[in-house]
Amino acid sequence: MNSSLTIGGRLIGAGHTPYVIAEIGVNHDGDLDRALSLVHDAHQAGADAIKLQRFDPDRLLAKSARLALYQSKAGEADAHEMLARLALSAAQCERIVEKTHELGLHAIVTVFNDSLVGETSGLGFDAWKTASPDIVHQPLIEALIQTSKPIICSTGASTIDEVKRATGWLAEGAEGFALLHCVSSYPTPMDRANLSGIAALTERFGCPAGYSDHTQSTLTGAMAVAAGACILEKHLTWDTAAQGPDHAASLTGEQLSMYIDRAHEAHRAMGDGAKSPIEIELDVRSVARQSIVAARAIDAGEVITERDITYKRPGVGFEPWRTGEVVGRRTSRTIEPDHAFTDEDLR
Image (cartoon, rainbow, N blue to C red; front, side, top):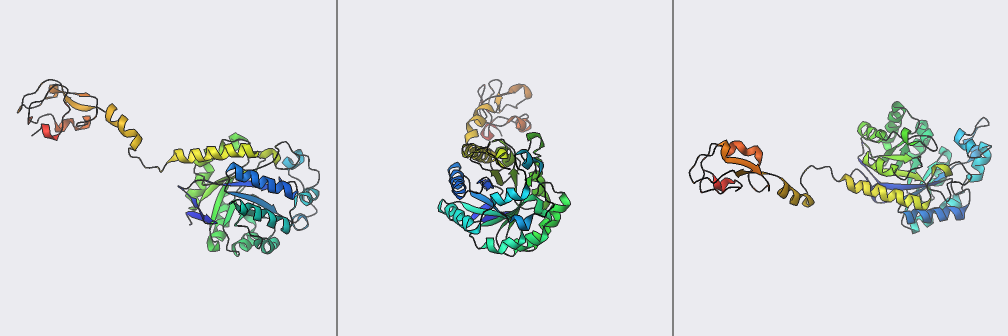
């Protein structure tokens, strides 16, 4: 499948700096000014993109819809009232996208209804992100594919067969796509993050993979990068103690900055995977390795025996594994004690 993804000219994939999405989501609390302030915070923190959510409560919720437990614990009382309070209009989204692009960031959006795709597609967003519950929503995913914009697909609470089926739809026509490992728990305990799932997605589906992070840690981004993530998504808030469904599983702008710095540091530490000496190792390599050296003075023409050699630093002559190339040969010149053997000393 696709080994890399491009969003707004930015190449995303193995070997590239991790692409960090600041998930504003609904942490704007329905307030446009607060959303714009969070865009600014994302930019200051060093994020590559922000992400919004678009939904229509009337089209999304049946009468039997209920709150998730974490939403109830956050103080919400009614699912419809919660979403109605947090919904963004098309005009509000368009203004947020404009601000995002002014700051040089990409704007990504999650839509929850296939009927919203057409309207939202014209608002200037650079890519789509599907929420984990919609891994089974073929009509929505196929509507997104038709827009020819990149798609990032979260896989929280999914089975491997469900992910396989969804990637099949994406592979048939998506402009480009990536998968995000995710644990659909808000917040996610560190011991349940299962970061090994990132590499499992890459190996199984051959596409860029990342991590949609619902932990409360500033370290998990770096851990995820070490585990193979090339995309990180982290919720951004103005106050982790604010009332609302997602604030508690989010980071403030200052915390997000730390999160991104650590993720970038992890990326630099990973290197390119090649196992060969690099420049900063060469001095220690030369100083600390041992050579085959003369244990005594040896006259020219003598046959070298095992008693005539020993091993000492520095590593400027034959390495110890080449002992068999030295013992039994004659010297081509007089050898002083501690001299490191080279080709010129033997005949």
